[in-house]
Length: 201
Image (cartoon, rainbow, N blue to C red; front, side, top):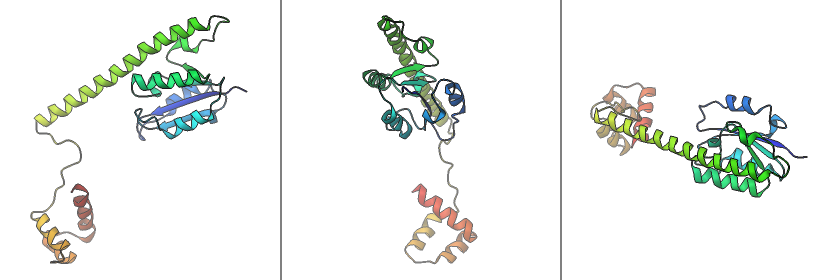
């Protein structure tokens, strides 16, 4: 029996898979055949993706919402499409209607040719879009730094001479209780600041 699989992916754990899941539900054999990842597209060792590859067999079909769910760059995406093709697995992309069509008897090569051209165009556009986004982010960071804005983790605010007292404490010249008194902190706040300070080193 041939199985219709689905694959969904978002780049971070905070993002939601529901929209892609809903789009694929009606195409797959059963929901258990929809594999997912919350991971960057540059990582092809994604657990869900690799488990799906192991489960697929010749004659199966893979449904994805858009071409960039497979990977982050053109070469990567094309490599995996080639793997699927060699293994006799049909890839259908919801955002590319021609890939959703079935092969007309004896004219499979026509559809394959059209799809290959479209995939070439789409992967190129997807990569350009990502490169443009990264360029904009880089320009935005540079502009913010030029205006003196701090980016990344908040600047750690510590009492005056914290570093000196910290070194004395670590070298056992003063006890933790004395350190707390010198910086006027309660125990919980003190140890929280110590942890933050050590993480920033």
